[in-house]
Image 1 (cartoon, helix red, strand yellow):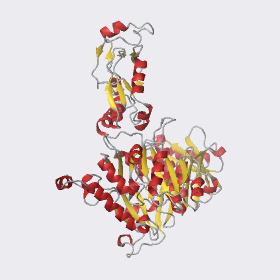
Image 2 (cartoon, helix red, strand yellow):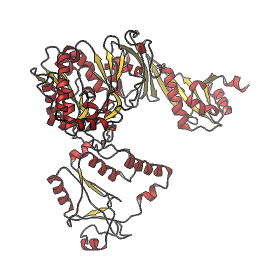
Image 3 (cartoon, rainbow, N blue to C red):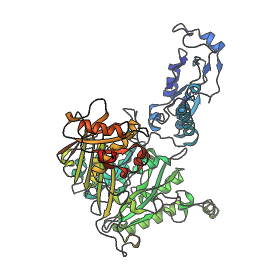
Image 4 (spheres, rainbow, N blue to C red):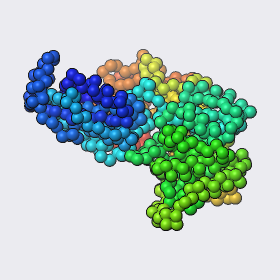
Length: 628
């Protein structure tokens, strides 16, 4: 239950509210506020022996949606919507937004009307009136208003919920069913661990494997991964086992030989609005030998789009409420085509799944896929499922479903630039070069740093690490997980190990790099340090920024000079630099003569604005020559 610090509750209020919540967990309770007379502030209201009859007589009801004041919901509901929206850091609208989101998630709102439950508001100057006096406050209030009226999602704080309930269940269960695909499974799990949204668990159901599947799973050592072995019972039995063991409110279906795009789980929730039970997306087929890629833009999922053929969107892109899978279950009489069968039964049951307009999966094509090994059974299952769906559907009903179809497809982000997906393909298909920057408390193990082709560490004058830059060549998917765990910022340059021939896919005939080319660590370091220092000191147009290299920390300038000392450690060699701010060139010239500096590297303040965008304006000057 949430409330405000300026509210007074009647003696029985909390007990009644608690009893109502326990009696019906599907309720979300709200209480209408009663305003006490103006100037009845907290200093005028006694701490004990409240005059309840006076409060009741003198107070006035405030409009219901003018201010919430009190909102009560089950802990499960709070976890489902991921609490209050943490973007709303200034008071105003956060209670109404929370109530609306709980309602969208499936709970019923009930305004309490019970004489034993009263909430009185003590008078004070309006908070908003004070907040909007500053530009920052006014902008925050407008931002809150925009969230309340325009953001129709209900699961918030995605991908990061800073104040997550310590006992909250995972938001998502990633369900992987496998049989004798240990090496494919390794890469499949790695792609899940690399997600931008980390509030998940992974359930691996091993359907009787005889290879080293268990060892592969255990090698990850991640407590979020739970492994279940069963005697071989088929794909449907394995998927039902995953649903029974799932703790997440949603289940993301993931196959043991496919790879998730890093944004998949996060983007699912941008498409889940009121009335939707899940979402899905498009996927890209890639050839496991050549790396050739082809987009499969899934249709919207509704009765009209599946009536003709019985087709359903790619199973490995689904995110759906776990309780729906538990209730409808996969048909264990089928050996393949189980996804189509479940999809059609979900549609018949009123389940709504929205298309997210995203590429959610990289689907590996290889000789061992079910579509290859059990293609006939899969086709037969699809036909049977379609007959089940259309059975007893009149011609009028079928025509109506087809007529109600509008646009079958939605725009898919990135579908015209599949080369941008290269970094997420398996290691045997691509070569990654990663430029890395780790700041603050982030840390990489030394054996990892030793593998870098070059690296540089920035320390303060006390020797404390501030940042690390480095370049890692031929980085693996496992390396990317290490970098992610360290909080590193990465720029990836990726090329194919083998070019894709026109026979494989004409559109991929040439190699190409994605994003930004890798940058040498020394250049990246200087760019970051100079931008930070120039912004921090706020130099005027008459002032000059510069730096010198010192033999040791004790050689730093006198305290009268505004400066910062930094240490850079690269491949075991330490260099010490001093960043300084001078009033003008005359002062820089004088201090050079007094201190005996041979050369000072200058960044002229007049060029500062340009320099912040293009650090090529750095120059090296001999001050005596410049003075002449």
